[in-house]
Length: 215
Ligand SMILES: CC(C)(COP(=O)(O)OP(=O)(O)OC[C@H]1O[C@@H](n2cnc3c(N)ncnc32)[C@H](O)[C@@H]1OP(=O)(O)O)[C@@H](O)C(=O)NCCC(=O)NCCS
Image 1 (cartoon, rainbow, N blue to C red):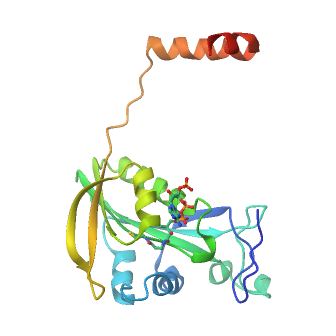
Image 2 (cartoon, protein in one colour):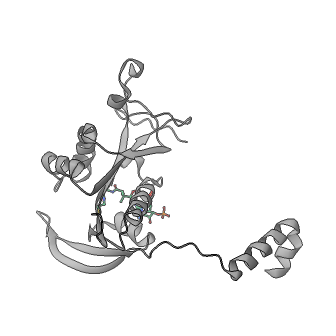
């Protein structure tokens, strides 16, 4: 794990603990929101409504130290209640009503200092897993056309472009790309073929020559 020592920013970085977000996280979330989306941040009221709204599932990512203990941002952290000193590095939210086939990734943002370390992917996997648990079959999101990192992330997760909303993001006048991930119903199936594959890999482990000769 790499220690992060930017002036004024908390010390430890990743791995992260994901937990459900609550209104107690509103200040931390709004801080990230305003730093991340300076021209079109959601309002505090809007974010509050998301955190308490029905059928939402919001997560925050808490930085932890090497031992998995939540990192703290204060020097006198031991005297403070833990909740007030946790370092929130990211948040992400899902809207998935019960019984609905379609759901939406509402938002995701990772603090700049924590980007490029797998956290965005981790959060997306967690939201997708929750959507699947809720029976969602199609998961939608909108992304700015001028946001290559996010578009790469969604591409890598299997989202496909299904539409464009011209000049959707104001005041910048940037198009929104609408993307969809299809979530087939999860099934567990044991077939003869998987049994054969398993026994072949067992054999290869016992005798490395077997693997080479089959390659
Ligand atoms: C988009 C965002 C959430 C990605 O989070 P992250 O933690 O940096 O992403 P990860 O480290 O998990 O990277 C996962 C994948 O995203 C893509 N990606 C991430 N950063 C990228 C960059 N700078 N350029 C291109 N692709 C990038 C890659 O496909 C990457 O997979 P790879 O490492 O195997 O190549 C983050 O950049 C962010 O918060 N951006 C600002 C807010 C935002 O744009 N939110 C989305 C609004 S729709």
